[in-house]
Length: 462
Ligand SMILES: C[S@@+](CC[C@H](N)C(=O)[O-])C[C@H]1O[C@@H](n2cnc3c(N)ncnc32)[C@H](O)[C@@H]1O
Image 1: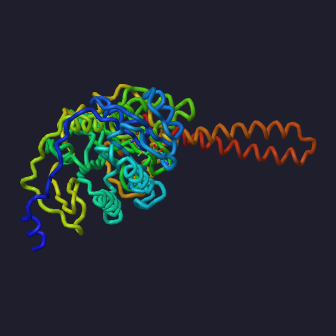
Image 2: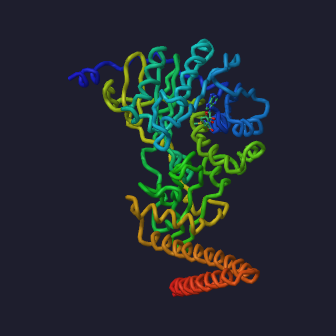
């Protein structure tokens, strides 16, 4: 009944002014490597400040955004520069993501978002927009407690708000990556920016030509992020606790290769070697973390162009969102009212380039050791894979077995040589006899291992 009443209620008093589309001046908190900012710049907006604590990310920002003021720790940032009218913050998601620690928005890292609201309050008069970004898991964790916290903070300041889950595939990149974007304003209508475009259908590169499949070689116990002609979400950590590249399996050749960091940058919409400056202060592998944390550039570009050219959002079929309902994938509200929107995660529909045509760099082959580890985890866990993929992993596992045996054999030969030398040098007869016996037994062991290897090699070629 309450739902029916709220549905029948007149729409909220949308006194929001239309936004005039002038370029905005952006302060980017938790800027990472500037995914949001790069996109916003391409739509004509500019930056007044970048705030980022990681030295490697700061090296990238310094090189890629020359002349923009850089601050390290958000907790020591007192004011936003004069003239800033958009505050953007992709706050840390480790406490919110599925792969993270799941402590929720009050976790030590995600709670840094409270500084966004502190700075918002201090610059209230000049700010026109607030843009937040995070992982969609935030809508579910703690029964949506993180999102509740954000919306309550926005409501308590009398802001209009809208949010939407958006997938990077919408912009033609073969990268499955969902992010939730929240936009708020005290004056303007965020739903006209965020919800007024919708292609309504999921981009897919599946079809008779599908050949290259992306997956996580570091997972396996409960899934491997299998993605047909696309890359699974680039992320910071992995099941093995290391920042690692996803891999691709070519169903035609059986080849398994890791994705090259330069292609990973491109899968996020950055130019090749965008994160190279990080190598001045960190190991090259640190670039994976930076790319895995970033917002896809075309998402920022789309937001930037929507901010310059908002269109009226058609809400005629939307229904009220009750306080106790789970968060949908898109919603909007303000002044105590909230509505669910049925827009999809694909605001636009640019043709999706299949992964086989997208990748420019061959990437290193996955080692037989890594393949054997993956197969082991898959067989112990609950992941289902195709027979063809399993066959290729099994072949690689056998090669790994062979490699390990050969290595052990080399070790035995070294030991035999050193014992033989010792036996020769032994002055005591008894010791010589004992060492000779040991040499005999090792020779026997080496011989049977050699036979095993030959049998395995023979089985492999057959
Ligand atoms: C989810 S990432 C944001 C990525 C960014 N939007 C991009 O496109 O690259 C969160 C960032 O917040 C940074 N961060 C964490 N604590 C911080 C702090 N106290 N002050 C400033 N930045 C911080 C992290 O180093 C990380 O780069």
